Length: 302
Ligand code: NAI
Image (cartoon, rainbow, N blue to C red; front, top):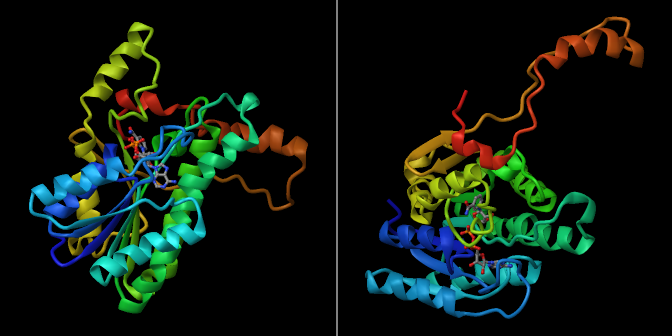
């Protein structure tokens, strides 16, 4: 499905990114395997090895890949990631914004540094790499972006204000790119993946309920997310843009996007007291509960 295309997959040294890179190569794409080889928190030493391993697997299977160890979290280095696709393969058709770190912390203890580090890799990184690829995409009149969002942003989670904000920001970024670049034949979609990876291995498994959740999650291997990414990157998805999907084991979900669900109107306008008396009783019945993302393991679409 991706014969003749060139794909950049960020954070492709392990987890979901590696599986997407392998699946894209198997589908015929030449792949830029980007990864700084960071720890889960992004703190400490970096290593080129994870990316090299992904490249080696692609080549063993007869595919073509190059590695790149530039960080997504900086404009100049993000430009080098896109340049490495141009240098190695002469074009770029697909960008998968997948790189990520976590710095979980309950909100009242979250430091500005924990906030910034996560926003920098996920939200700013997705902007930088997308923006750098927007120029060749525009010039050639085609291109596909696939961004990894999360149910932590779409639904909510404890201790992840930085990550949730970044991941919901990515949805808005994707939607805006879809609107702005439609005229150039460029598409942009999001996937909320589910996978047992080092990123989810820190989910607590103490109570029986938590243990059951983690057991379910362990069955969701990272490669379950790859077919959807390959499809969205391919020409078979030519009429799919601005959408948010999730891949949960063998299920694929389409997410709703925020729209007004109920209105209350008063031709004379409102006072705070009238809002309390009249508007709220009508709207309150539509309030959504405060859900959190791990609950979606037992969650059915409505
Ligand atoms: P992972 O931790 O296994 O992989 C992330 C990769 O990104 C690592 O190889 C890391 O070295 C790389 N990376 C970190 N900072 C980077 C930077 N500045 N530049 C380039 N590469 C960098 O995580 P996993 O689970 O595979 O997650 C992949 C994506 O999917 C992330 O965006 C994550 O937020 C998202 N996601 C994962 C879920 C899951 O269930 N595992 C759930 C929802 C979203």
